[in-house]
Amino acid sequence: MKKTTMKKWALLLAFTSFSALAEQTYSEMIEYPFYEVQKTSEGKNNKMMILNSGVAAFWKRIEMIRSAKKNIEVEYFIYSTDETSKALTTELVKAAERGVTVRILVDKSLAVFQLDPFYAKALKTKGVELRYYNAAPIYRISSVNFRNHRKLISVDDRYAITGGRNIENDYFDYSTEFNFLDRDAYIEGDIVPTLRKSFDAFFENSIVEIPSDPQRPKETKIERYKEHGSVVTLKREVPNTKKINEYENKIKNAEAFISESDDSKILIEKYRDAAAPILANSKLISCPEITYSTDRPGGDFLTRLVEAYSDDYRYLRKTLFDKAITVDKGIIVSSPYMINSPKSLEIYQSLLDKGVSIDLYTNSMASTDALYVAANLYRSVFSWARSGIKTYIHAGEYIDESSGIVSDVAKAKWGTHSKTQLYIYKDSTKNEFMIGTYNYDNRSNHYNTEMGIFCKGSTELYEIVENNVRSRMNEGYLITEDHKAFDKNGKEVSVFGANKDDLLKMAIYAIPSWLLSLLL
Image 1 (cartoon, rainbow, N blue to C red):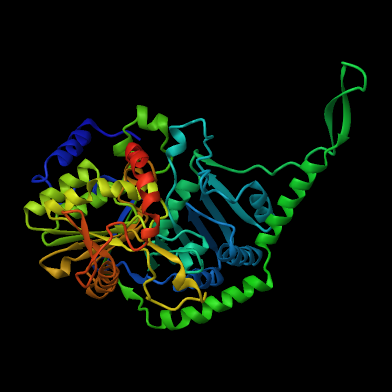
Image 2 (image 1 turned 120 degrees about the vertical axis):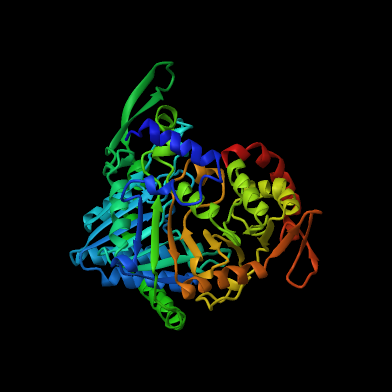
C-alpha cells in the first residue's frame, strides 16, 4: 500500500502542529475495515453493554457462542488451557459440530503461547480451524516483537465483544492467586461485520501460520554405544519409548481439553447463576456514533525498516491522537501499564496548557503482573504530578464490584487490566469513551496490533463507564510530586501499593527495568 507524497506531507504537518488540528484529519485516512464510523443519523443501528464484571463477561461469551448459527471468530493474545478456557473451548466445539464455522486466531508469543499444534489437530477433527499470528522464531529478535494483542469474539456478524480480557482464569474472576479488574464492550449492530472483516484480514495475512499436524515419532531410534572391551562405537536400533509416550500424552491432553466434562458443565452453570443478576442490571443501550479503529496486520522488522510503517500499519494511535487533541475539559486513561512516550507527553502538555484535566489510572508495583514494566512508572510519575497530571495506582487489593464464583477470590492479588479512555467536553453531549486493547506503553505504540471501539453521544453509556472508572480510581492511591501517595481518606500510604512485603523485590527489579524501558 502506497501513500501519495501530498498525503505524507499532510500527516507530517498534522503531527507537528496541534493548532492545525481543530478537526479530525489523521484517522479518516485509514482504509476500511481498519477504521469505520457509523451514526444513527445515517441509518446505522448499534447497541452496547458494558461488561465490568469478569463473571458476566465470561457468561456473555458463552451465550453468544450458544446462539451462533453461521460463524464465530475468536482472536486473542492469550488463550490458555485452564478451566475457564476449557469450558469456553468445549462450547466452540459444540458450535462447530452443529455446523457453525469456527475460526480461532491466537498470537504465537512464546511467553504466553499454549495452544500448540496438538490442540490445533484436535480442534481440526471437530471442524474448528486454529491459526497462529507471527510464528517468527526467537532468533529473529526484531520480528518476534511484533505481536497481535487484539481481543475479539464475533458471532454471525451480529454480536461481538472486545476489550481487555484474554481467555484465562485471571480475566474471569476465577483465580485464587491473581485476578484482573478489566472491562469489555458487548456490541450488537451494524458495526459488527466491520470487526469481522478486520478479523478476516488478520486471519488471512501472510504473517499467520497454518499449523501442521504433529507427526508420530518412529517406533525405534538409532542409539550409539560402545561394545564391551572395545573402543569401537557401534549403532543399534532401540524402542523410541520416551518420544512416543510424550506424543501420546500430548494427544490425550489436547483431546481432553476440547471434550466436555462434568467439571466444565458445572463451571458453566456456576457462571450462569452468578452472572444472571449482574446482567439483569446491565443495560443494552443505543450508541448514536460508534467508531471502530484497529491496526493493520503483518508488521515485522522488514516492514518497519523499508515501508512507511507508521503510516501504513499503526492506525489506532492515530485515532487516539485525533480524539485527544480536540478535548476541552478532561481526559481519563485507564491502562495496566503506563509509560508515556514523548509524543503522549507533548499532547498532555498541550492539553494542560489549555486547562484540560488529565487523570491516569494504572498498576502499582503491588498490583502488576509485570514488575519490570511497573518499575518504569516510578521513573516518571512524580514529574507528571508536578506538571499537573493526576496518577492513581491500583493498590493490589480486591474491589467488591460483584460476587464471584470462587470463595477465596477476595484473598487473591488483584490488578487493573482495563484499557479505557474517556474524552470529556464542556458540552457533555460530546463526551466519548474508548474500550479496547491498547496499553499506554511503547509496545502498543510501536509493535503490538491493537483495536478499540469508541462510543459518542450516549450520556447513559458514558456515565456507566466513567462511574466505574472513577470508582476504581477512588479505591486506589493518588501519587503526589513529593514521592508520596494517599488513599481516598487522605491517609499517606506506600507509593508501591498495598503489599509492602515485596519492596525489596521491587527495588531489585527497578534498575534493570529502567534499562529496558525502550523495549516496553
